[in-house]
Image (cartoon, rainbow, N blue to C red; front, side, top):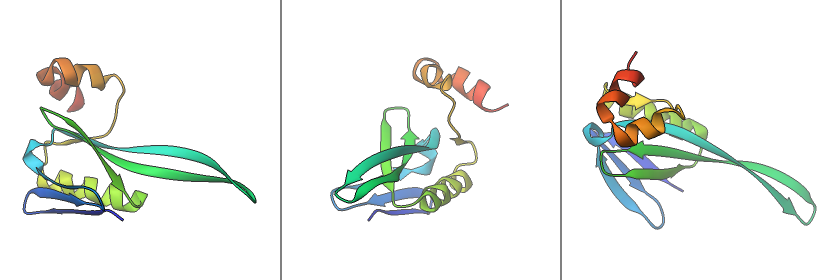
Length: 111
């Protein structure tokens, strides 16, 4: 069970094996990644979704597992309130631009 809190301009993440803190002002891009997982049990098949919050800072890409989609969306909303310049959506074409030219990323991601 992950605990993710955004307060006082910081994001705190703690799970069974990880504890991390990030200043909201250091996060430049964030988005929700949903991964569908099919699985088999002795009595049939199942499907589940894994929710990850992806954070991009100038130095790193961080994946934080959320327990529910609602938790992840709530964290993204709180980050946006803490850092109004933060981009909160994913666009595949932006990935290479973010990595190579951050000023261009800012231009195209803030219409």
